[in-house]
Length: 522
Ligand SMILES: Nc1ncnc2c1ncn2[C@@H]1O[C@H](COP(=O)(O)OP(=O)(O)OP(=O)(O)O)[C@@H](O)[C@H]1O
Ligand SMILES: [Zn+2]
Image (cartoon, rainbow, N blue to C red; front, side, top):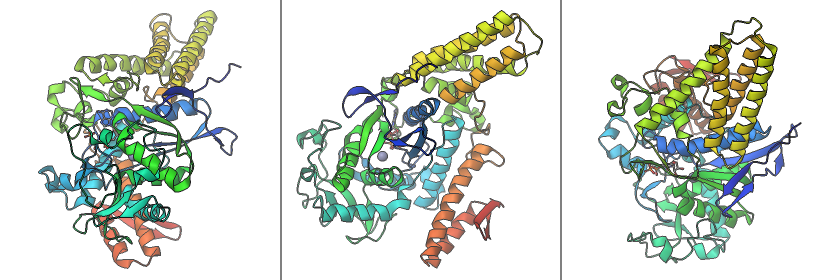
């Protein structure tokens, strides 16, 4: 039996490419990878740049599973606390969601909760369109405020945090390892060019960052021992990662901009709380660019999944030409290795669509093979070629997610199937090898579409009858139901009724059964 390859990744923490080694073992005896990847802030649709980063996480999960590992994969939804000036540790500016609500686009939402729900639904729908693996847990910041308040209290008790008139701050000098991920240690380095740090005269060190912002006027606010307000953005991820994955996790990821300040601050909070290492490895995806610039919601130069994959009459972008199959877009977004910047062009999208068609044709040929015997030698040759192609693809993926190598190998196999299908034809044996190959490539890279969820052609996140739309709606309703159950358990009947109204407004009927609530579309 061939040896299972090591899974090597560039660890941003050590600046070395290292073997990823899960420390836990699943009940099945397989290694268990515990992995947290930062999700989006749901103040608008995620753009394809955000998806480049989510796809890196997706490929980590798929590669680990291809090695026979089990994976516990958590990717959050940020729905409170992410402020506009987030390139310094102690961010200032407005809450991104509140700002979106105040914009022209925001007028169609009743409130900030409604806005967050809408874009979370859109996120899940686009996640399905691009055939990303569903995380085991997709926690929301707003549903983990109690845990965040507890963490703030513990940090204060441990001497790592203090209160001012404006909030509660993490005291950076109280944590020795600050700067180990990003190299940003000195206050000067945190100044980020010409922008001034947020001024709170009560702060003890300019590097200190907010764990809690006191703001009784904020649209989303919670009672806390240190005053009404909302949690800082950095806090949610370390708290939710530790809640769902444990004190020390195997791998934590996000886009390159998160290395500092977001991840540096996560490390400080988590390690100050437990005294243990937070994540053993860190992986950061370089930016997707358009015309040489970072694609960014804030810059407005962004393209969404639906811009590129649905027809203009349903809101697709006309200036980007005909819509492409979502899996062609996926193929394009993973075609550059995650550690290198990647420039999106129309030409590359067209090339990706052509390559994707090779898989569609190969699958069609395998599914419609004649069944008659063709040639034993040819059949054996195809089997060998496909085994080799798959092994090369897996080797590429385990070599720091080298997708250019993996995709070239995968395409070699598809082309071998097509060459036979268009020549002597595929017999039943060959069709079996071809199907097995396409299944394995699909599990590893997600580009063949055998198990991809159905998606609506109009790109809707709430259209009736589509499984992507259903998944989005289902995620929303389930989250609200869980919240309503928690409110009932706390005898908070007013909150439970308000949640029931929110659920009704989604157009579903809730049925309370002995085994808990269920729902269906109205
Ligand atoms: N152009 C990009 N290419 C790759 N990843 C990106 C890009 N822009 C953002 N990301 C990553 O996407 C994830 C979600 O980002 P988030 O929703 O917080 O972005 P944002 O800061 O609100 O929006 P933007 O950065 O577009 O203004 C993060 O891991 C972030 O690093
Ligand atoms: Zn995060």
